[in-house]
Length: 454
Image (cartoon, rainbow, N blue to C red):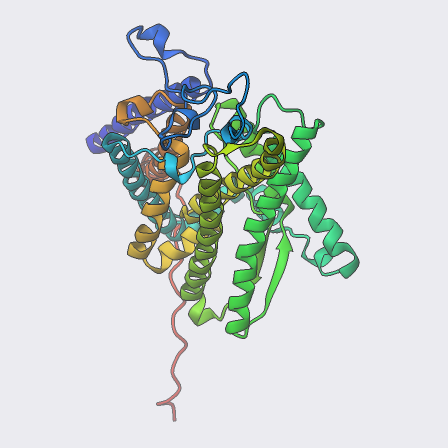
């Protein structure tokens, strides 16, 4: 009795602290609470802009000193290309390779965050997986008792619903795929505040995002189908409409919490490969690794191209050629940064060991292999997008890092809550309420043997 009461008091204290921390982080991230009003001594949060990141000698942006356009040009003089080529606001916070911070405190902070992510995501995923597997019968019974088992069944069917049969009809394949990718491009274009989707700039941004999302998605799917051919097994391409709803939700969340540049993730479709039962786990891990390698190559090409354009920004261009050169360099820079952004975020979210992700398949196959894959990707994600220029304490002033901590606490809270239910509430129900949660029924006795019957 005393032990049970101690459990209840301990979990109640943990729940209060956890809920308070979650509510506080969410309120601060959304801007509802300003920490500087509570603690006046706090510094202003740093502005994450590529203009304030390291730049090579001879290259700068209009907000930095170093480049001035002379009022009159002498013969042979030129205008730096950087005066006419600027990244779009959505990509202004995505650094080129030359702009990565080399400060030890920034590198150390992002390495720590990557390892912390690996420990929390890997640990909670393993615990949740084992817990849900061991308690599946009890969970099904409670869902049936609460009358929501059918609701969860409908949700599962919605996530599994595809347009695969429609895609197979030749006359509809190309138009349908174009429409789906157009919706993705329009959705991701809303991440750039202040730009109307009906303007010329907004339409060009939507086309850029649709192209990059399609390229990243299709490249991984093609790799999976090639592996299916190598294994001589059937594969098919499906479009998942529910993924568009997920993309819309992440864009709304990005705008609400002022995330920079925002969450750009959502695969329009996927290639399903049939697996033999005895090789399912290993081959799913191989498919996931092949897909990740393809995404690394695509993102690397985009990032290298953005670095090449960035290296040209300090080059002087004659005035009569500036418009032509800038007209080529500007879309190349935007497309390359967009490709790197979409590929890296897809890599990060695909390696998270969540349901239906490649990271889950790798973790189930080999936990060490998953950690070896995840930590470098998480570090690059942190160092380029999440926290490109802040040390550990300063990083808490940025909305990106605060949201990351919010997400990690949610994962810990869900895991702790389920553990509390299966290990504490179960005891209370049995001992005080009199409800007997379902148990696994014993196996039926073996049939009698007739070998010794005369």
